[in-house]
Length: 246
Image (cartoon, rainbow, N blue to C red; front, side, top):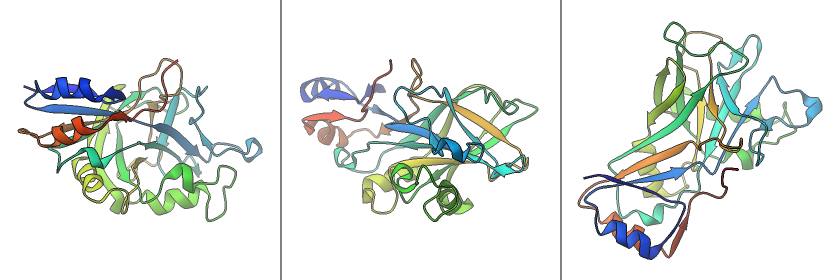
């Protein structure tokens, strides 16, 4: 039997009650923030990082080829308030899920126009590393993207052929987070279209801070029998989501 526990602000007693009746457990960790950078944003706005406002007027965060239609491409990022201490050991599986929505600007993914999109591990938190107002310097969104969104940082790749839920297997990365915390990788994911042969590939994902939109999330399956449940239940209170939908 597998059950799902969505970990936001759960009291210890409630977790203990659930844990006591499970033979396997899936923990869902919502994105703490999700946002995008883009060469299509104008310097006059003094903001090259958008979508992280809460609430946000941006319904989606896009990802494109590195140079789309001759302009520096777009990158969607996702950060997580992840706590490795609640896990007693490696997890069985972890999948990242985001909702593919209309790009509103480029052609949408379809069976005849698929978008090959990879998720990437990041060695630094993008929100803390990128200067929102700089598009040329060493702390610009371009410098960060070029250093972080590389073929060697690819964790998983999915071919998107339409709108709806898209999942990537990120088990290896989450187990790295559990083993080493954020000493090697930030608790964050980036997106890229480096493996798509189309030079103008684009996809978009629902932005969690747009009112009424569900959050991108990571689903973590804890193996059974699960000693990790002991650690999970021992936490006095867990808050893995810092904002609520309007």
